[in-house]
Length: 508
Image (cartoon, rainbow, N blue to C red; front, top):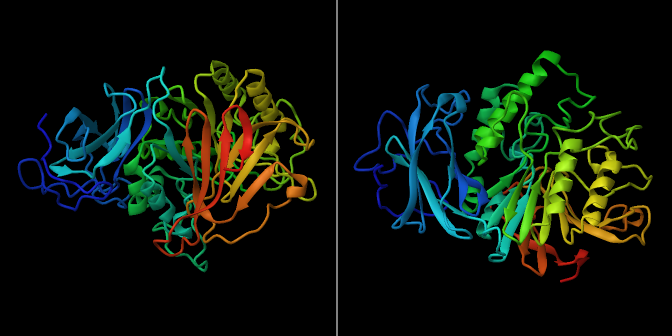
C-alpha cells in the first residue's frame, strides 16, 4: 500500500474539504467523505478497533451521499501524529450495505501505548485520531484517567461536555447510552437547535441520518478522536423505555413493524460505533455485553440492561409494578446475570467496574415508592448481583450509571432497609451531555432521609472523571452550567475517593 502524504494535521480537528491526496489532488468523483470524523474503541493489549464512515453528504437519505459501489479505505497507525513512524497499515473495503462504515480490528501493537491513526479514501485523508492500547494482562500499567457520560439529546443543547472531556485527554471514555434520541421536541418547544427530520425514527435510513447529524458535531468528533471508547446503548437508540424486545405499555405497538424497527436501530448503532465484528447485529438482536480487561488494574464489565429483561414494563409508565418482588425477574436477564457473576469469580483486576445504564442503588421517594425502569423494579436481581460479588471476594466493585440526566454518588448497601447495613460497593451516576437542557443549582439530596446511602446529587450537565490507581480511585463530578450556549467552562462540583479494599465514598 502506498504511504500517506507526510503532512502535518491538527489533532482532533476535521481536515478541510478537498484535502490533499496522495500524490496529487483529491478525486473529483467523490467529495470529501470523512465529515463524520474518526473513532476508536474496545482496546486490547495488542490492538484496538478503528472506525470511520464515509459520508460526503451525511444527511442525504441515510446513505451519506455515497454510491452503491464498494470503496477501498486505507488506514495506518503511527507512534506520532505526524506519521513519521508508521507501525501498521492496511486496507478495508467499505460497502453500501453497511453504510460504508469502517471497522478495522488492529493487532500487533505494543501494550499500554499511545498511537495515532487516520484513513484515506478516494484520495482524501481523514482527521487524525489518538488512541491507546490496554496494559498487558499480567501488569498493572500506568494509572488510568477515564471519563464517562451519557444522554446527548441534540435538540436540548450543544455538546460542550464532549469538548471538555476531550480536553482532559483521558486514556479511556465510556458512553453509557442514549447517544442519539429517536424523537424530536414539539415545534413550540424552545430549543437551541433542531433535528432535520422531525418524525420519530422507525427505518434504517432515518436512524442512519440521525447518527450522521449527531456525528457532524465538532465537539463530539473531538471526544471520539482523543481516546478509545467503550460504548453500550440504552433505550433512545431504539425507543424510549423499551425493554425485553417490547415497547412501554403506554405506547401502542405495531406488531409487524416492531422487530423491523429494532433491527434497523441496532444495525445503525453498530455501523456508527467503534465496535468489534462480534457485535454486528443478527436481525433484531445484538450482542453488546462484554468484558474488557485493563491489565491487572481493572476489569470493565459492560452490560446491556434493555434487551434481555425478563418482562416488559408494567403498569402506568413504569411507575408501578405489582410483580417487582418476584425473584424470577431479572433486569439483565438470567444469562447475563450468570455471565457477570462468572466474571466476578475471575477477579482479574484490582477494580471490577460495571458499566451499565440505569439507576442501581435503591432510590425510594418520600412515600416509599421507587421507579420501575431501574434496578428498583428488579430488587431480587440486584440482590443476587451484590451478594454475588461479596461471596466471590470482589474487593472493589464500582457501578457506573447513566440514564437519569442527573449526577449522583451512592454507597451500595447489603440491605437498603437497614441504615447500619455494611457498604458493599459504590455507584457513580453521570449527568447528561445535554438531555434536559440547562441544569440548575441544587442543595441537598432528594429524599435522602429515606435513602441515607445517597450522598451527592446535581442537576447540572456533565461527566465523571476518575483516576484509577492500584490503591484508590479519585473521582470528580464535572459540570457545565449551560448547554444552550456554546463554550461554557467546566468546573468540579464534588470530589470523592474510593479506597482499594474499602467500598464506598470517602472525602478526598
